[in-house]
Amino acid sequence: MMVVDPIRKDDNELMAYERVLPNGNDGVVILAKHNGKYVLLEQFRHAIRRRQYACPRGFSDQNCTPIEDVRREIREELGADIIGEPIELGRIAADSGLTGGCVHVFLTNIGAYKQRCGHEGIISTIELTRKQMEIWVSKKRIDDGFTLGALELERCWRLKRRRARVEL
Image 1 (cartoon, rainbow, N blue to C red):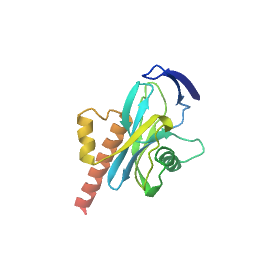
Image 2 (cartoon, one colour):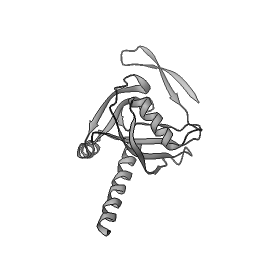
Image 3 (tube, rainbow, N blue to C red):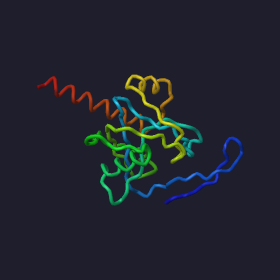
């Protein structure tokens, strides 16, 4: 269900803020990489009333597969196309006490992208290396649960791949 809330900005002016109430469908979270760096969105998140750095993400369309949802979200939020096939890293049940849905987590490479400022509260985009991501997490600059979960699933996936190479 789509809801439009009137909210006050810092200058006391009213603005419309659109949000989607969960419909029971799953969603997707995407660790998108451009030229070897992770692309994060800086977005204003109405629920927490502040800006937040996070991976692109969104609700699933009932008629789409998770990979189709990944492609759609990357196009909507970054205006980009995916290079190669996305890798599914796992699932996250973000709030199993309140909602029944999960998000499927994917790792993918993307081509050139555009700043989509204003779309879905997007303020800017930023590219970070893995080391920079770890520093930002340790300094609490990245605190989005979906992004933190996606980074951990990717870390486990990389460890599993390393172990498999050693065993060969």
